[in-house]
Image (tube, rainbow over all chains, first blue to last red; front, top):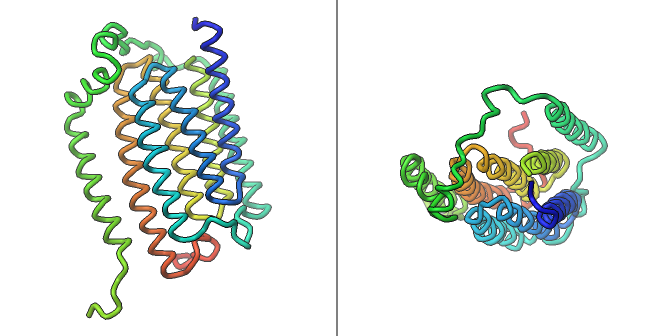
Length: 180
Length: 97
């Protein structure tokens, strides 16, 4: 059972994450929405560190909040979309109704599942080896499976990144009118 | 804290899905997809304390895919903006039929 201070901080960061994600989907200006999303990601990074995934927490701040969101804000700046548009960004009544229905349905599924017992194959949790994690450290315990069991997948993600870079350059390139 | 993490992840995923359905700005919809990916990452991290470190390895993969997706998606948005001078999805209905 974790101590009281840990629990208070866990709930605090969770509530801030929910509040800032609600602010994120309701802001009209794309820049304000992006900054609220960055706030959500910081809270999630804190939660990762509290869940003893320190490396993932740092990567969350560096890659998500630091790189991906900067690319989003850069595109907003490039296309000059900082001001809220004159056409309402939020969809009309039917869109809101559909979204509310979907949200309630998803939450109802969670509530229904939380009351049930988990099926037998999902219950035993024996894969987590606390001693090995303590020996290898926060980064080594992630790197050890990443470069042994998942080495092929790791190499394939490098190909994926290469394809994505080439694709982004080709799609984003301005075609010259007098090219041919 | 496993149950709380999974509940928080479900709530964040639902908020992201609601955002995808209600917004019209293509960039904001992309950011909502990122929020949904983050919610799934939280599930992976929370369950990795029970089932082993493979969950955290998958979070690294998910972040790589998210970075690739953001690069290609934003390039597509820029290309569409050159054609239509807008990113509002109401005005982008070329494939609607």
